[in-house]
Image (cartoon, helix red, strand yellow):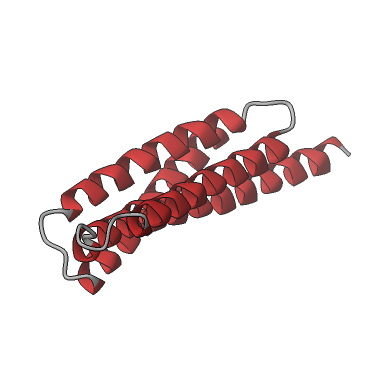
Length: 139
């Protein structure tokens, strides 16, 4: 039950963090309807991250699995961001759409990183607390 509640609260907190990051970016870039995609992807990343971290709690060494899931998730989105920036700068000067592509790309990457970080910190903290409680009860 503890693992389910941990994942539920992580879902809520990371969804809030990702949504706030996307909202802040939408306001900062004066975005319009193109940010609908950003909010949809933010919700999808939150659900996928919750499932990954939920499963990581059931492996024999949950703290290591959670750290690995967090590092892989952050690395994935950082590499996607670098790829997006490289693709944007590789466009010919006449066809570069700086005002349209880059804010949406940043909106896809930054809220996703915020979501994974909140999941990683919260689930890792709860698992460490649970392991300490089990070790204290067994002694």
